[in-house]
Amino acid sequence: MRRDVPDRAREDRSSARPLYFAEVCAESLKEDLVHVITFGTFDVFHVGHLRVLQRAAAFGERLTVGVSSDELNLAKKGRLPVFGQAERLEIVAGLSVVDEVFLEESLEKKRDYILERGADVLVMGDDWAGRFDHLSDVCAVKYLPRTPAVSTTALIEKIATPDA
Image 1: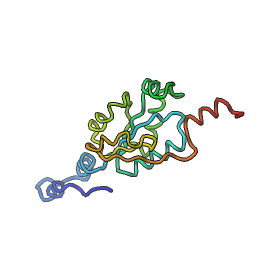
Image 2: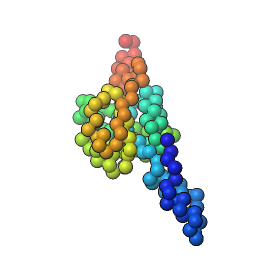
Image 3: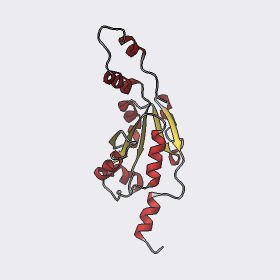
Image 4: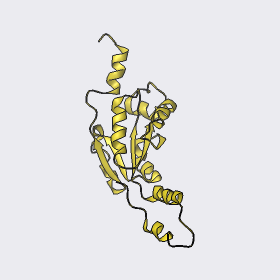
């Protein structure tokens, strides 16, 4: 899905100063890569989280992930995450498919996060289907199916009651 090098980079080849590979790469990174953004809590990280991030990354060349703050998770789900936001940021940042992570502090700021980071595509799980369609004026919006039989809530319950 990578786009061609911008025409102005090709034009620079004929100029007196040679265009170095690093300059072409830097220019390409700025303007020609499809930038994907997604959001989540990513608590008790599991294979479903990994797969959704891998699938999100496949929509472009750069993946940015907003990790929900502890306070946002408490407001959204009525409980604090098992792992704190610093640990969850570190886990997600350590994945090879992820280029950037940041702390998501409000569901209502998704438009701002998308615009601030120059995202071309928003990818969310299908449990949010339709909820972010209003953002299609600033980027493409894609909803991905969840990994069957994998759920953070179910994992937490299983750990809390191992005999069940």
